[in-house]
Length: 536
Ligand code: XUL
Image (cartoon, rainbow, N blue to C red; front, top):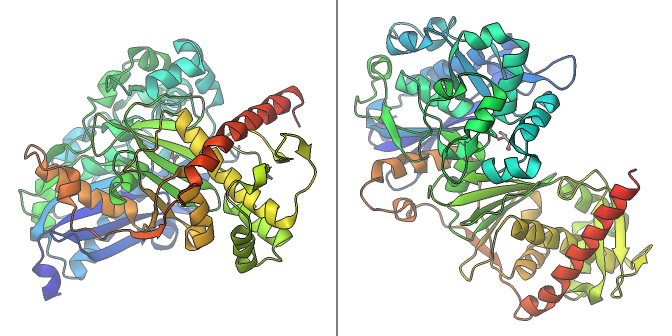
């Protein structure tokens, strides 16, 4: 382990749903150490499945807070056993699954500040939480609280304008409101409420770490423009909430140094800085090194879009968060449920289950598909909220079927046009410097990526993003060290691996899709309106 000992580095942590992960990144931006603790496997005594407990109602989903604490003990011990030289760590930062909340009991801050280096954290923090099982992002039990919050601020659109999202069950304000309503005693014994991210930062800091702007945007409580808590939202959720949340800070702020506990027990330098922790999605944006105008498209079972934008127009769909890298900018998140699931179905039905036949069909049809457009939502789509398959010919007439090649191109063009239209609906604009970063299963298919490049009129790149939240957190730690020196994030991480160019837009693509995109948008609206008139 002599090699480990020599490297000055930053650590990036990730408290995700199923595990705690860590990477160490050296000053040349190489990841030279990775480790993880998996909740189900390594901490089986908590009895979680996929890191969570789904309660009997099927809606409530929680994770034991002490499992999250013990995972840190375990991971640090593993690193120590591997000979990791903690004295070389310049700074650390981290990510957490978004929206989850931790309720610290009155008196917990004193315990955090006086940790004994002779005992693991989980032995000392046992009595520190007023709620043992924390609500996590998979929870959907707060519909009543969501309606109350929207009503209190003048409706869903008003809440979205204020906080970047309409009310969502998993968003923390609604979760806090539920705790207050159903367990007022536990609420009144709570001195601090953290997000999973700021909770993890607090463990390192030995005092309460502030919530950062980006993860704070996933609470339905933060005014994303002013970056302060919305009094109307706080009042609608629970009393004395502002004092329990503390003051939010920019995501790349240094929030302090590691507590003496880590210096004495593991040999960290007392100068090792803690940079604000953030949500896993914002941390991934940093890990993928997106820049203004860039998009990351994750082509998985469902498709997810991360957008970097400057002037958002929050809507009833998607989420706008404060940007973790440039605090005055924003990021948006959009989820499309019918992603690979739909691509695989159409491949099976129209390309005999073969990706190479599917690709051949894309290759043998022209951009714009002769004006034929298709909508393929076998499961209830999120963006927009409709179900079913619809096909339209060049005269906007609904038809029952397309020839097989046309069907395949209609699916892929339709999926990407929907992404562009809904992204633009949130204020996103393709810029001359826009890059698209494609990840996930379908990003291995060049013909699919070509359509993506053509529809957006921007080059498509690929890169390994398996650890992007962790790596992004380590980058943010370096970024935090550079704050105040006028060195921008892009400069801080300039030695990091470069994404690979996979497709560039065809010269005539802009012309083709400029004509098609408004037609697609109009037909989609018609489908949504029709569905509203005759719900299935
Ligand atoms: C985002 C969300 C999830 C979690 C997963 O809004 O709920 O992506 O952050 O960890």
